[in-house]
Length: 267
Picture 1 (cartoon, rainbow, N blue to C red):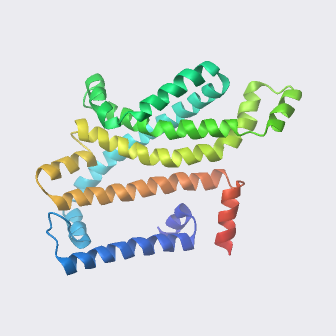
Picture 2: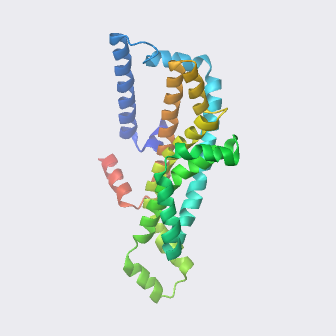
C-alpha cells in the first residue's frame, strides 16, 4: 500500500510530507475541540467522525462508489468531447467563433442554476449527475487543450508542410504531443470539478450518493455524518487528482516539469 502511495504521489519525500500535513491538521483539530469544547452540532472531533464512519462503513462506501462512478463517467466524457471540440476549434474558424463563445457563456452560468433544467430534461436518474459533471469539467479541458494545440513551434509546422505531411499526421505527431502537458493541466482541474458536479446533481435530484447522504444528515441536524461525507469526498478528490498526476508522469517523462521534479527527488 505504501509503495503504491509513493508512486501515486510522486516519491517518498512527497508522500511523507502529505501524511505529515494531514496528521498535523487532524491533531490540531482534535486538540482544538478538546480545549475549546465547541458544540458537536458545530464542530465534532476527528475521533468522533472516525467512530461514526465505522458504525456503518458499508453504507458510506456504497454511496461513495455511486458518486465516484458518476464522477468518472462525466470526467471521461468531458475528456473525449473536450479534446474533439478543441481540435475542431483549432481547425475551424466557425467553431472558434460559435462553440468557443457558447462554452464561455455556459461556464459563466452557475451550474446550480442549470441543474434543475437537467432534472426536467433527463429525470432523476444518473443522467443529470453525469451531465452536470461533464459541464463543469469540460471547460478547463477545452481551454487548456486549445492553448496546447496552438502552442506549437511554427517552424515545426512549416517543416511538416514542406514535407507534405497530411493534416492527420500533423495533428497526431506534432500538435497533440505538444498539447499533452496543457491537456493534463486541464484534466487535473477537470477531475475535481467533475466530482463537484456529481455532488451538485445529487443535491438537486438525488436519492443515492454522498451528496444525498449530506442532505439527509443536514435534515436530521447530524453534523457528524455530514463531516464523514465531507472527509470521504476530500480523500476521493485527492486520490483522483493524484491519479491524473501519476498518469501525467508516466506519459510525459520528457517534459521539463517532470525532469525538474525528478531532479528534486534525486537530490
